[in-house]
Image 1: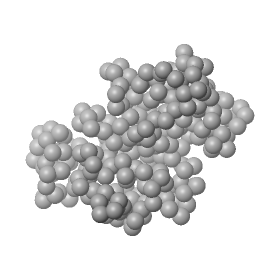
Image 2: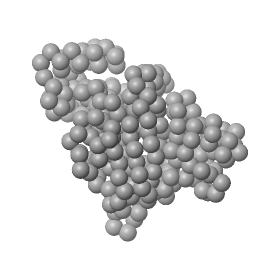
Image 3: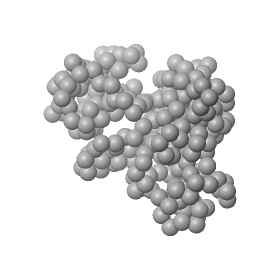
Image 4: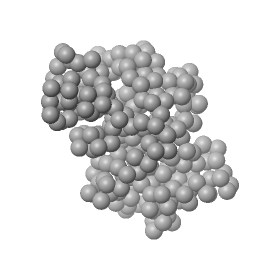
Length: 243
């Protein structure tokens, strides 16, 4: 579970995140939505301990992201906006390297690598160097790295960005599988159809603040709009009438 309470962060005079509060429960998919520059990525970076909050708090499975960073890192799998593969390493070697960073080794690690290769349909590229991989292939490797230690919380920053139709479909099915396994999934996306299809709840951020929260259906009801896209536009345009 991810618990965020009055989280804030600024860069100089720019207040990137202001008193953001929300909860992402286990066994659910929570969408973190907002226009470019709204504070989504900054919020995620604080959650995965890359940035320290200026004020407020965030907890992962009860562990504070500032005071218990190592414990937090053990409990999260992160797909960041920059995939950052080691191109001289093969798919298997990239995953193995991250497993070792999480103190995994021997049969436990190798069995988990084999499981992920099958789960993400990567057997054909398992022993190829990742240099020259397609966007979809790179994404699969990055997802496998993030999940090698079987974290209970998964943070995905635009996981379908740049994918073709079939790869997007496969990634959505994979995200649903994470939910079925009882994991807490928090992800960002600009694709309203994707959010409507996947999310149990949605947190909308604009200008660094939470402007609306709820299920896709409740957001439509709150704003009086028929589509989630129209509800999103209404939510980022005005906070009035939203709870």
